[in-house]
Image 1: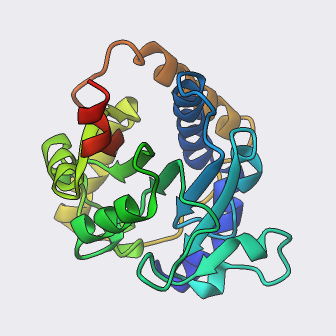
Image 2: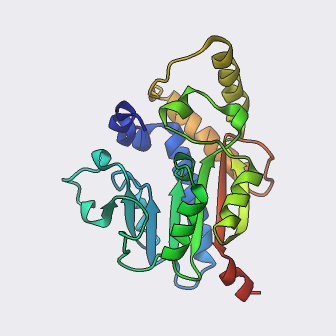
Length: 249
């Protein structure tokens, strides 16, 4: 991501309704998975963890450690610094314990070879581990925000499924979220194509609007949990190593 965006990322992650609503959904999904898994998730690997931004909330489920490629957004003074490997998910990374759960939250859209990154996660994790991925959805929703983030792609559900399966996983669930953002995002995309736009760092709306929008999207997530809709600005997928899934049948 651009440096100016990286400088603002912690504040956005902690306070902006979009990041807070995404975290709420991710933690809810993890909780559901942990409840059905004997022993839960003792070891958790957060790929693209930033400055251990989600660690405190992940400790409810297990012991998190992370990988962050951008050294400039990792604070040396952080109490969680020792749990972060600054670098890539490659042969140089040796986890403290093979992870039971690997998170890739809006990560794989940043790399040229998403299948290779997903396959690296599979090699790192336990044979019966779980992968949880979120990505931006819909090529037609591309805006200057994607440019600012150095995205390589926005995904269709078919494209995400194909990448995850090509890396040796079997998809357990895959659905859109942030449904109500689709039309506003499309309007921005069409306006930018017509008139152009310079990328700008998101700002946090004033209260109580910020809190109200977060609550609205958390409500949307609950209402659509049992009735997945075929559109949205993001996708979330849960997958397991293919051999593990086959062996459990």
